[in-house]
Image (cartoon, rainbow, N blue to C red):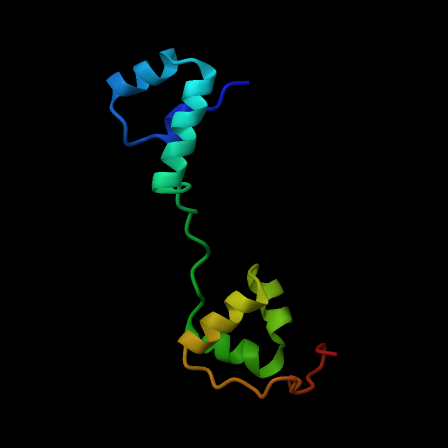
Length: 104
């Protein structure tokens, strides 16, 4: 199955695109490899936006980073970055969240 060339090489002109399609598979493969080396893969789509700082503070008061990440649909590392960016004072490493009903 041929590679979808159009999404990978959005910066080349239509004339060069037609020329690239006329090349042999070996030459086309070498060209694509050179383009990926020069420009890198396409950028990843943006992830979810951080919730408001007040919501993050409330969540962190009663939940662990793992629980916050699961609740927000992100990794614990992303949750930690959001908390730090919101100015939330982090607990000591290894410290547990305060016990709350339903948070065992």
